[in-house]
Image (tube, rainbow, N blue to C red; front, side, top):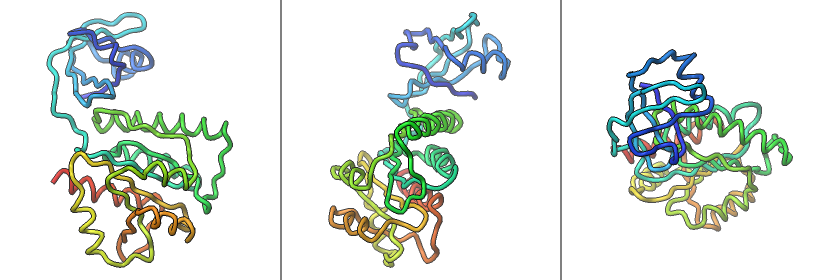
Amino acid sequence: MYQFFVEPSQIQGKRIIITGSDVNHIKNVLRMKPGEEISVSNGMDGREYRCGIEEFAEDTVVCTLRFVKEEGVELPAEIYLFQALPKADKMELIVQKAVELGVHEIIPVAAKRCVVKLDEKKAANKVNRWQGISEAAAKQSRRGVIPLVHTPVTFQEAVETAKDMDVRLIPYELAEDMSHTRSLIEAVRPGQRIAVFIGPEGGFEEGEIQTALAAGIEPVTLGKRILRTETAGLTVLSWLMYHLEE
């Protein structure tokens, strides 16, 4: 079943109005017909609104609500991925897969070893692109919300943003105690906010690691192998998803 996102104002009782680019996609790409069922979310409350297509207008698709599925697909905890900017287009892959795995928000971090340097204009264009990928991935994976991708921040700003979160983890190549890492993951509880810090190619600088440790961010190991930046975050997200949905 196809899923689409609408603004809360477009859900009007039993009448749901779809506008924008989704209209063309439904009419001319998917070639759907009146009576066919689609899934709609408002991107905020996690509910799934099942509705049937009623009619097509020139720039809208009018649907009738059939029922609301209260039990959504969102993880019972909010995971915030603080991802250091990687080279090339790796961030696009990271955003896509992180959304599929249930991330709540993604905060790009301009760490010291990041090769990519974005000025204000380039950053705005990149964030728009990443947000579009987040929306597409949310549709594909039937998410109830569209995870927000933030404007890049400095490492210090990232640490400050995460200071009030319940669990804060940073994979560190010198961390060795897998049993400690396991205990931290297993201690995560529904309703908590979890920050995951992932370094760039080459990892965080030692000074950044010390800043994180001084702020109470817990170092964890990802095993005996060195993982790429685009793999490390997805590994932690997979662990958390498995634990929270177990």
